[in-house]
Length: 105
Image (tube, rainbow, N blue to C red; front, side, top):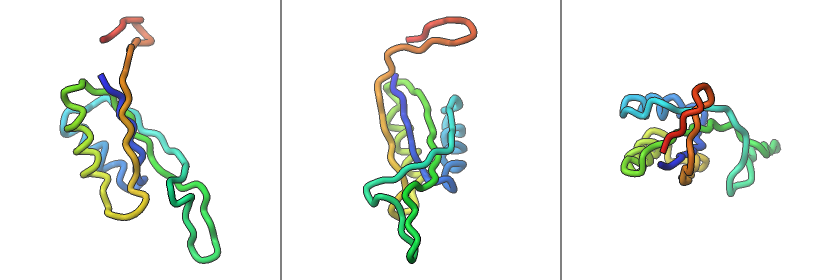
């Protein structure tokens, strides 16, 4: 299993989560976050914004559908402008359900 963390523009987050749900990726976490990328923030006129609002979407998927999920996220989050986001993929070693204590994997 893999954990996919997608950091996307807030205005694109609903497109991404709706697309994931329609494709059968129903379990996800979505949180507002702030940060900056390579451009070190955003300058508009004389104002510099060091931390830009983004949305963090987290899903855990089986290894055989990782590429499908990545393509979908990239397609749904794409605007073609700087700051569209990043996607990180990490291995999941263990999953434990809090309520029941059952382990998955």
